[in-house]
Amino acid sequence: MAKVTIQSIAKDLGLSRNTVSMALKGNDLVAQRTREMVLRYAQQRGYVASSGEEGERQPPEREEAGDHRIMILRKPDVAVYWDKVINGISEEASRNHCQTQVAVVTQEDEDVLRLPPGLEDGIEAVFCVKMMNIDYISVIERRGIQIFLLDTYKDVDGEMPGDVVKIDSFRPVVKLVRHLIDQGMGRIGFLNESSSIYETMHDRFDGYLYAMRQAGIEPVPELVMPDAELVSSEFYNDQTFKQIVKGYQEQGLPEAVVCGNDEIAKFLTQTLREQGIRVPEDVAVTGFDNDEEGMLDPFFTTVNVDAKWLGKRMVQCFLWRLGHPEAPFEKIDVSGRIIIRKSSVKRVLD
Figure 1 (cartoon, helix red, strand yellow):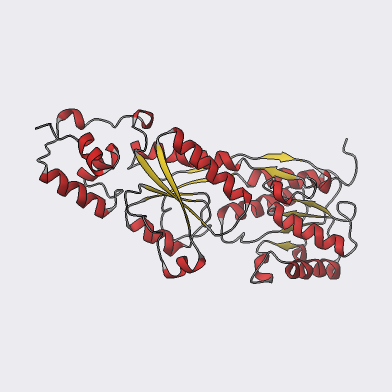
Figure 2 (cartoon, one colour):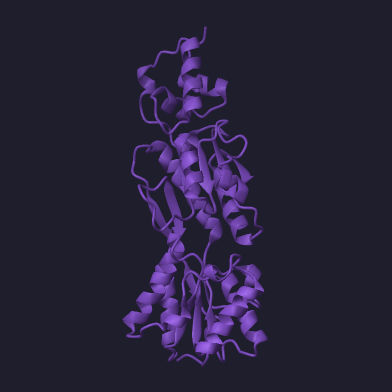
């Protein structure tokens, strides 16, 4: 009879060698059902660990194709930005012999804590390309499945549930605001959604405040809207931005508005134009993300975010985590690049 090894068990059960090794050691990162299945099968086959199997696992590139299984969770939107992230995940996963599948999580799924079908069928890691609510993430975490996030909540009790890869938002916004100030603008507003909820959005707000105060300019409260989704239960619609622009007109127009992303910048610019307010001549506008779908030419001064690289970096974190399951969770900031375009330039810069 052929010797029963970790590799042979992995092949028979359709799992990775690393998953079987971790399960045999009782590692909580492996789902309980998977651990029980591995232990039961190993006992039935008379598995006895050999000294050669107790060393470090082989690097991911030496694994056979399909050794690791990843589930990507996304929301039911059609934004090209998220597709780029998913493409990055898929490409890097395939290059490193990982299988991926995409599951759409609706708001109802989150509310009732309904997990995607197949989540516990050998899935080693979940990649959240958009933030799910804390309770939903916790349900996944309790099943021993590794979690990788593209952002994190600003204020969360306890430790992070997994590794985080996110765009560095603080420094680019500081540069955007200084670009406006260098042109002589001081009445600069800030418009964003969910700055008090998501860390990436909060970093953009912090960058705005830091740059303004470093320049000795105290922001005008009426022009600062870090959580503008409170204006409407559905933020991205014409009525919401009509209310915002009406408020600007009543309080006195800002010289510029720093927007949390390009979609906000697009809605704001279209609404300003409808009211006969010129961009950038009357109000300069900046965005964030370099979203090709919302550029209006392209038109917006923005921050280029390599969304595809964010996805690839998440896979790299997963591969590293396989060999370091006990290491503390990490948060990785990926830098963005400022792009100056017409929307923010009121005069020719020296």
